[in-house]
Image (cartoon, rainbow, N blue to C red):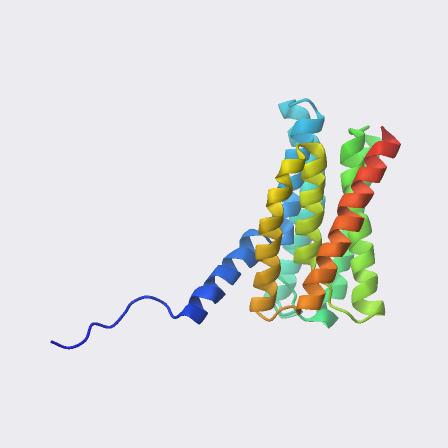
Amino acid sequence: MPPTLSTEPAPSETRRRAARIATEVLAPWVWVLGLPLVVAWQVTGHHLGETVLWGLVVGVTGSLIPMAVIVRGAKKGKWDGHHVTNRAGRLVPFAACIGSLAIGFVALLVGNAPHQMIALAASELVCLVVALAITFALKFKISMHAIVAAGATVMLMKVYNPWLAVLFLAVAWVCWSRVELRDHTTAQVTSGVVAGIVLGGGVYIALAAALA
């Protein structure tokens, strides 16, 4: 009887598949779309209408609009995909993110949104501006996957419960995925985590307290 060939993927392919899943499921646009809705639900006292309103103001301007620009540019060959892994190609995507979210931030101010939502949008803007400076002034491709995931985790710990620190397991997974796929180095994801905690989470906590 001839030997049965295994249908199981090779270990290296299994690792890459897990990495690709993490990279897509925990991508920055996913966090930035979902996080404002989750935070708004808590800070509005579980008011559905206000949750949808303020959550989508941040989610649409911070995630969906920039992502539409990025995907369109990728299809036209302006950069190497919707994750924009080449450092030089990140200028326009950064500009789209910052410009769009800035409009959302103004809408929050004009609409007298909860101060926590204003603080959330402001902290995201700070992360984007600093990441832009690091990427081009220092020519260091800091990981946006790491920044956003780490910052979002700290915000959720503050808004809901410190036990949500368990989400740092997801942060570790997505950081591993970026290195495994060779889109980033260990230094780039590590610095991203630090920036996310300090600039994303730290700025949010400080501004939320100052605006209260």
